[in-house]
Length: 67
Image (cartoon, rainbow, N blue to C red):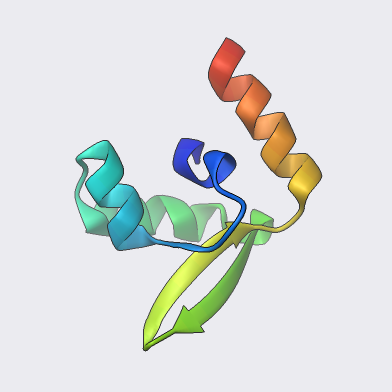
């Protein structure tokens, strides 16, 4: 979620996995568990994610920075 909290555009699970040096499958599992907070968009046959609302992104940014 930290990566999603830092960007205001859509991002792929592959991009998140690469950024945090994690397995893409694990990232996809986490994103699926958080789906109610995400907007999904298909771009070139690949699912990209963004946070549902900018206020939630602000909240997460504060939690990541201080939590």
